[in-house]
Picture: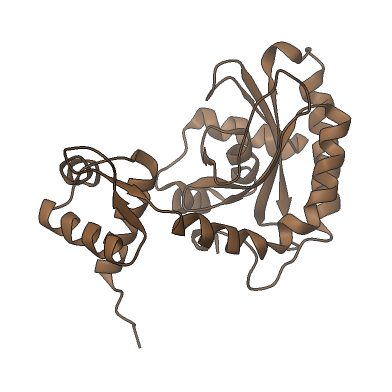
Length: 252
């Protein structure tokens, strides 16, 4: 028997996510951003405020911002991320070997979300953080996981078909095992990524090295890429593959 979804719940969650991304923000701006009825957005805001998820920001006109409750829930979820705990030693070894920042990110509805981040110890460095959202189609982490999806799975994950140019690039990524983002998202920053894969081949996470482009010589991406592939293959043998594995439901 089909179970009816709570559409109002989806609206409230969409409003919460929009507030978190654009805070402080008012109801009119949220309504335009979400392309939703202003009164419905207002009801969602008041519901979130009553339950302690958001609050009015100082000043006028009325604008909204998230409370610390969202961070408490995020920390609770992170504390139970077995994949992150098992990968930490390997990620730290990568940071020490490469001297650059390392992230672990998982697919989440057309994007990737960082669940662990280890900053480089160098004075000039990139500064990724836990909770950072990474584009699914253009980032090194996104390309790393997309390379091991079928065209149908990519369509389902991204919500649109991939371009012929991206398809060609993903075939290269699948063949050599690592992906590259050369300042496509952040000017001056280069990322190299590799996918962690379940025994059935599906990608469940990405490990990414993020570095200032000026510090990388012409041979560094390939060298870092080979090291990433080795680490990803090793972690793929020890990562948890139970029902709580951090996999986007659109990929199953």
